[in-house]
Image 1 (cartoon, rainbow, N blue to C red):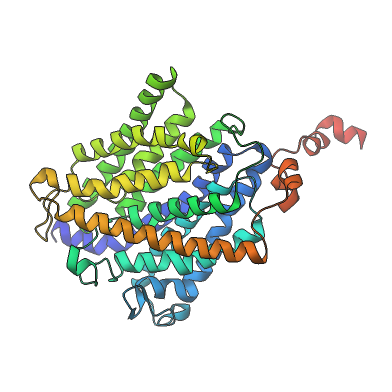
Image 2 (image 1 turned 90 degrees about the vertical axis):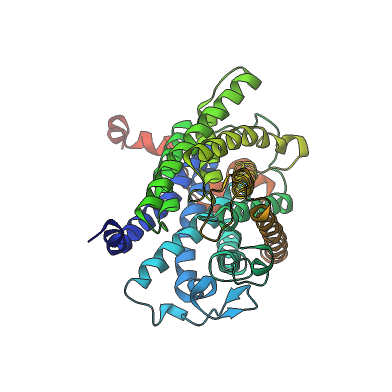
Length: 423
C-alpha cells in the first residue's frame, strides 16, 4: 500500500481528530476573551462561547448541515435546508464531515462575541447565534465551499474564477469580523470607553487561550488536507505564520511604544493564524512567513484604530479577524504557487487572475454579511433588546445576567478553616 492509499484510509480518523481540535478552540477562545475582559464580565464572556457550542450543534443537526452543502442548491446562495433535516440519510464516514463542519460554524459565531463584551444581554445573544448561523454562516459556507455562487461552477466563480479559501478567511474570519463591526456600531460603546479604561483582568487566561487556539488550529487548517504532502505543508505553514506574526507584532510594539507586551504576543499569534487560514495550502513556508509578518504589523496598528474612529470593538475582533482575514485572503492572489487549475499568484507569474476572484469574493462576503447581520441585530434590538442597562453595566454583567461572579472572595473566605470555625 503506497503512502497516498494509507492517507486515504486514515483520513476519516484524522478528520475526527481535527474536529475535536477545532471544537477545543472554542473553550480556548472563551479563556482568551474571558482574560481580556473585566473581572466582572469574565463569566458572561465565557458563557457566550459555550452557548455557541450548544446552539450551533442544534442548528447543524436540524438544518445547518443541509444549508451549507448537504442539499440541492437554491439560487447558488444556500442548499435546501430540509434535504437532510435531522441528518436523515447521513451515516458512516459522511457523519465525520458533518461534525467537522459544525465545529467551524461554532467557532465563527463565538468569535463575534468579543465585540460586545460587558454590554450585550445574554438572552439576545441566545437568539442571535442560531439566527446568524442560519442566515449568514451557512449561506457563505455554501457559496464558497458547497458549490454555490463563488465556487468554480457557480454563477460568479465561473466568470471571475473560483474563490480560494482553504480553511475560512472569507467564511470564518472576515464574516465574524464584519458581523462584529455591525454589532459594535448598533449596540454602542461601553460606558467610559477610552484607551486604557477597560484593561484585561487575567493575562494568564489570555496566554492560555492563545496557546489552546494555536494547538487547535492545526486541525482547523489541516483537517481538509487531501494528501500527506499537503498536510505537511499546512502543518508547517500553521507553525510559521503565527510564530512570525508574534515576532512582528512585538517588534512593532517595541518601535512604537518602547516595550513588548504579553497581550501583544498572544494577539500576534492570533493575527498570524487568521491570516494563514485561507492560504495555508496554497503558499510555501516562505510565503507563510511573509503573510504572518504583514499580519502582525498591520493588525498591531489596526486594533488601536477603534479609539480614533470611536467604535468600541471591545476585544478587537475587527482589528484581528477582519483585517488579518482580509489580508490572508488577498495574499493568495500574490503568493499562491501554481495550482491544479493552472492559476498562480502574481509573484509566480500568474497575473491577476486569482486576485480578481479574491477581490470579488471579498466584496460579496462584505455586502452579504453586513446587510444580513444589520437586519438580524436590528430585529433583536427592536424586540427583546440587545443591550443591558447602564446600571447593570456598571455593576457588572456577570451579576445582572447570570447572578454569578468569577471571583467571589466572600464565598471563598467562607470555606477557609477560619470561616468554618465561625459557622
